[in-house]
Image (cartoon, rainbow, N blue to C red; front, top):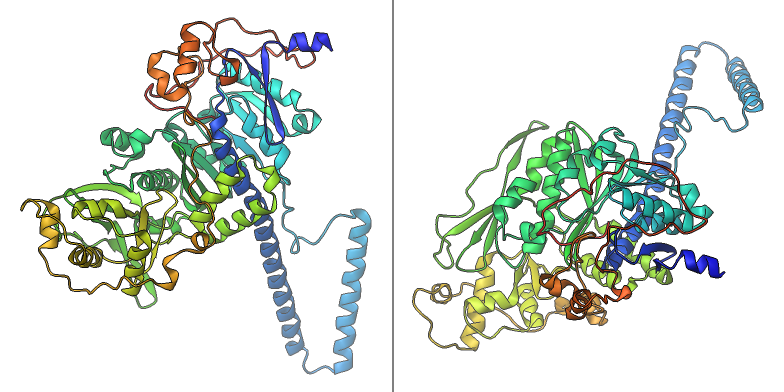
Length: 604
């Protein structure tokens, strides 16, 4: 026992869910415990995918069986028509002989191969889904998939860093025979590997340190038809408008600054994935898209159809954001014209806004194109949430993912972007109405309204901006404000008389079901400095204090970093391999795929 402990003295055992990994105390391989939210959400969606995949296969087989039966009945009826001149006794006798002969043939086939069934009945046996984790690092995610998701086939873990692959193989062995039989690790460039394995994997998981943009082209080719691509982006400074030109170079869209920036980041990422997929006659169907902690995560299914990709312009829009007030408008890229049972595609008609904003008289900034179609599948969201609630003990981050899924399930899925109630109140310089009162006013005006999972004060509504500002004008009339400068956007908005008389009496649906039941929807971080971590191998300095905290920084400076933080200084000396799980495989050393130094960390 002492010998085993001696071999493990340079390692820490990290446990998450049903998986355990060995981590070097020098942090040579990146690991971020914060990403437990990401991994739990991925496992929840993956379980739903396995169930849906099986249902779709059974439905397809039933459809083919019914088609064959109809064809067979039609063939028999045709034969009956040709033999109408013969007697009914002879006809029955012939049919009986045919059926008897067919039964004898089937019995003979069964005797040769007991498991064989007619080709029309089962064209292909449903195989367990194959999973590819393109950037595995420690391999924790792959191990959790293999151990916690029933019905999966092989899980392939890739990394182009030799230390990470060695750690992954070590962790596979550490998790026993069940992991060894299902998970395999390879030292490879993820982009090359995915390009050389087209349409091979039912599940492809991309969770890079920073931007996933360089992996998208190969990823959409590696996913099998009907498979699912799970993708994370942590470069929120790029996606949220701080560096618009960088965002355009990586994702092909220009962001605009607004309170909806995190949802816009989701939609920019979806538009980029769709663009890459379209080049290979493929298209995506988002099932869940979430903003959590410091990153965005999308789950999309990938299909192949040359005709369906013609509808892509209908799913993309440019955004016109007013620089004075919070109003924004969307301009769809394309439209369809129906004539004589035929559909013709044409460019969108625009612009949808004048040169100056109708509400405040200011100019517009233009951003996009973004994905303006729904970013969630309501059926998937409800199924995933129900499944999670039934398996509470198997999710370490149960509270977080149920809160996110609950809020997502109550969103208006067909309304792109949102606005902040406090922001529009700030524009007219008034005290903000309560969210219940504002929602009641919108509902009483005959429009829909909901919250958003991205922002606790965010509001989604199909009410036009004229109605929104009329409600605020009525509110200010009942709650007078001080006189504002004449050239301010708020003054211009309030100078107009409201065409709608707002009714602030409480509506029945002013509170969502979750709010009425007081279900927690927005949870605080479980601990301080809950967020991205320093990239493995990078020297920790005082500039990382916001990521790790002053105690961790002081520990590094004083040479006494706590092992519990998992972010100590990295040494060049490799620790000895623990006895019993040593891997003598000699593989070439390659450098870790590196992106921008300014991008925050994300555990693959």
